[in-house]
Length: 214
Image (cartoon, rainbow, N blue to C red):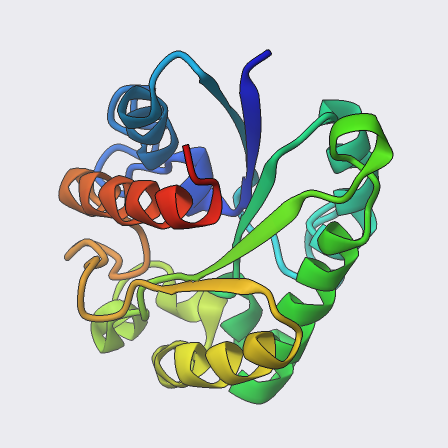
């Protein structure tokens, strides 16, 4: 049986292309590239949703709170070897009034829920990997997404990885930081371009080899 890995994220896991407003093809998305790198013994399950937050209900759009969805999501895709969570970009929105520390707390809470959901083989618990997304570029505020996102999203996203790493270490949850390695695009400065997807897939591939030894 193939080892099943679920990738739980937002528009950067869904594969949003800021240049066209559409979805990148499967072979361009980091999840698709990861599947190709891992080979036939693995199955990648994409669970990306644009606008998804870790634990916050969005007053403008429904169904985006990751915390309320992750349990049924994991159970419906069981059995799972690994759950990969990459969230935090949307949590920086000004309307949520969260600090970078609050965002890290929310992601950790979500990761702990995944860690203790019996969605592994024969009701065991899956391993969990949390990825800190690339920081939002400060130029985002001058793009069409700036008004919706609000102020200081770049500051929060830049502070997030260090705080998140420290909290996750106390919970013994695997962590991967993309800062300074994977860039956001130069259109809205908060989504991955083709190069970003490729770089992320390689980073995740190497991390999976540590977590799930062959």
